[in-house]
Structures are given as C-alpha cells and as structure tokens.
Amino acid sequence: MLARDRRYDGAFVYAVRSTGIYCRPSCASRKPRRDRVTFFPVPEAAEHAGFRPCRRCRPSAANPADPRVALVREVCRAIDAQPDAPARLAALSERAGTTPHRLLRAFRAVLGLSPRQYRDERRLDRFKIQLKRRKQVSPALYEAGYGSTSRVYERAHAQLGMTPATYGRGGAGTRIAFAVVPCALGRLLVAATARGICRISLGDDADALERGLAAEFPAATIARDDDTLRHWVAEITAHLDGRQPTLELPLDVRATAFQRRVWEALRKIPYGSTRSYSEVARAVGNAKATRAVARACAANPVAIVVPCHRVVREDGDLGGYRWGVQRKGALLKQEAVGRTGNN
Image (cartoon, rainbow, N blue to C red):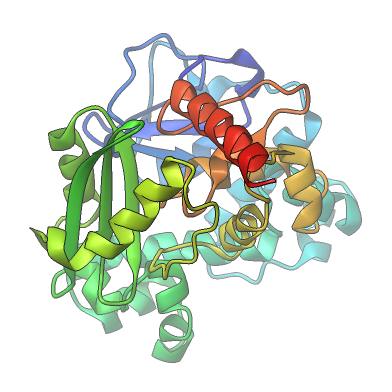
C-alpha cells in the first residue's frame, strides 16, 4: 500500500475510518495515518463494514489477474448475503461452478482461511459492531447470528483480547500501562495489561505513538508508568542493541487463528536469520498463503517480540514493514552483526 504496488490490486483493499472510504493498494490519494486504516480481503467486506468505494481508484471495479481472487470474492459475497447459513463447501462450490477442493485451495491461498473460518470471522465482525452500538452482550450476539453466549465467550480472549462486554465498551475497565523511551530506531512505545504486553510500536514522534495506543483502546484506562514496565523495556532495548538475542515476554494480543499461527512461526525464526513469506506459509501448513502471511505480518501489534521484520521477499528484497523499511533494514543489519559476535 505504501509503495502503491499495482500487483496487489484485487488482493485486498484498505479503508480509512476518518473518511469512511476504502481504496485499492495503488490508489494515488494521500496516505492516512496507520492508526486510521483497516484492511479487508475483498471490497464486499469493506462495504459490509460501512465503508464506501473511492471515486478516484474505483476499488469495487478491480479486475484481478489471479482468477482465484475473483472466485473467492464471489463466494464471499454469497456468504455475506446469507451470514447465518452454514458455509458448506459442497453447496458453495456448486454455486460457484467449481469443486470443493479447488474452492478450499483458493480460499486458503487468497485469504489464508477456509470458507467456514471466513464466515466465523465475519460473524465476529458483526458482533463487534453490534456491541459498539448496543453496549449489551445478549442482543448483540443474537443479532450477529450466534446461538448462545458460550460460543462467544469460548473464543473471546483469543480473538478480542478481552471479554465481549469489555470490548463493547471500547476496552473500558481495562488498565493499560505504557512507557516511551528513546532507542536505536527512534522512539519505542511499550504498553501492557495485567496479562502481558499488548502493544510495541516504533516511530519518531512519541506523541504519535501515544495517539496510536489510544486509538486502539479508546475507552481503556491508559496511563504512563515507566517503573512498572522498566524491566520489559530494558529487555527490549537490550535486544535492539544486540545485547540480548532472545526475548521471552508475556503477550496479551488479539489475533485470529491464522494470525496466531503466523506469529508463532515468526517467533521461531532464529535471531539474525530471515525467512521468505512463502517459507512462513509452508511453516504454518499452507504453502500458497503468502499474501495472507504478509497481511498477518502487517497486523502484528507487538514489534520486535513477534519479529515480523525477519520476513522478506523471495528475491531477498526487504518488502514492507509497518514501522518503516529503513528500520527493518537496520534491525536485520544489527541482528546479523550480533549473531556474528555471539558465534
């Protein structure tokens, strides 16, 4: 998106909360702040969330070269049109004029999900929207299509990072401590709940980092607390300086099942080493989900601890990085030096 790479038109769209508009990755419009951007796999998902297409780049008219993207878009529309219906492969594939095996492979290659997982995540999206509107769990879960409260609460911590009621209040009742310190890469923000670190950000402007944290948890009680986070901050800065290759810190992050598999795979990449997006895709059991792996890397809320900077393109190009490609290059260079020194 930052590079306006036309090769990814049709693979995903991005939406800007402040304008209510969604665009293609290659759109020539001015790029918004990261904390205002949400990514969607297909235009229909963005429109379902209330965004309207950009008149400049016309993302809803995208004609992707990869036929699997068109197939997945068609089935996503069918699922969104009947969100409460079972996402059975046989019925969906017959409707789309393909086989269940081909449909499943296309979904996993484009989205990194099965049709059923897509249906479940769209249901969760609707539930989150209803929670914001209604502020009560029971009406929201039935409106979103859940049959019982147990189905929601059994996945709440893994997918929301907090209980549904707390999420519906924008994180109200959640206490988050944070610290911002200078580091080798500019400014480092570390934020944590009682369960563990929930956000690690890099940037040049401390105020901008704090605004990003507030945007992620708008109703939480957020307070600067350098003393509470001193030990964790010291470990992370030592890691950035090459003095502590291994980081084993507790995390409290929201993630889909696929994101969690990707992030776990990233944490297994040795210090000073890199992997390609396709290698990570194979490591999580879906060799063709390279785009989905890239999206999971971009969604990583805890830089450094989940080392998404160690994932590069097949040809060795650094690719993108949420906190800036220059920082990614500096991190890899520092780790290469540190690995040599440790050996």
